[in-house]
Length: 399
Image (cartoon, rainbow, N blue to C red; front, side, top):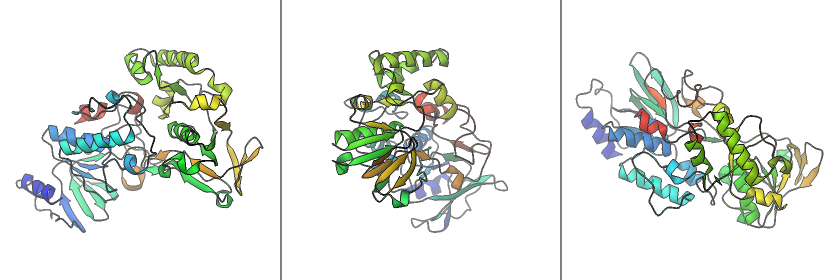
């Protein structure tokens, strides 16, 4: 941190704002002038933004609330996690994955890649600093970013906290009387601790579908709550990744590509509706583009559902002592419940601005790729819709 502050001091020797008080290594309640953008979040998007800016000769400062880069990957993901998309679509700008990495790198391999990326571009985030507020000071023409340790002033602010900053834990009637474990997937690591137990997984997104498969592979007796329709696609089709194929076809009308994906999925996976997994009326790409809801890429869960090793259950009515009542009137005993109910953005909690981000969910108001830039020197990095439409578009085009 001392090295970074000395670098800033050198770069701002002739800056008109140089009289603003600099921080020291303690930074306690000090105000630090940052000549380049302040980037909030040291995940993949924040690292990519810093690297691209550095390549252009623009210094930046990343503020991270946790004690490491990519904290979601390092601290809040299950052990069996692998990239859902081929590595060539997940690499950050200016640095490819190692050639010996598999097509779908593991969680640990992805973390190794990100750490190597940070070392290569000499990215040194300021850790353990949660942003309390970020507000544009019109009289100064600057962003004031407040943390628990001090303040940062900059002409530019980059929001790179992603859409998965906070776990979404639903309120279910009777949760306090259930008695067994009720754990969000952000705290789930492996199905090994549930061996021989009956476990109910709530949520049928990618995390829920992988979690229930992990439980099954560790000899638990899992069931999956499916409350809504969901698009399930094979991870690969016609000898290539489903994502790669959709990218090759992206110049065609979206509805035509959706129709093609659904026809091939029906041939490879069968009628998922017969398994209790009905499909939405909108196609997978159109639904993703309009709502941000990502299709599930199957990695083996459907086969276990077909054999009966994984049971599909309807929505939950309420919980009772070690049991669950479902909306269809049935009741079943369970030892534990895993909440694969997703995450949400925490941007509305600290960003004092309503032009670009929705105050309700913290997501951009404008659809990708048109909503990345604000009017007063701030932008967002990373997009909920870029995950199935062409990552890493933003770092390469916005720096």
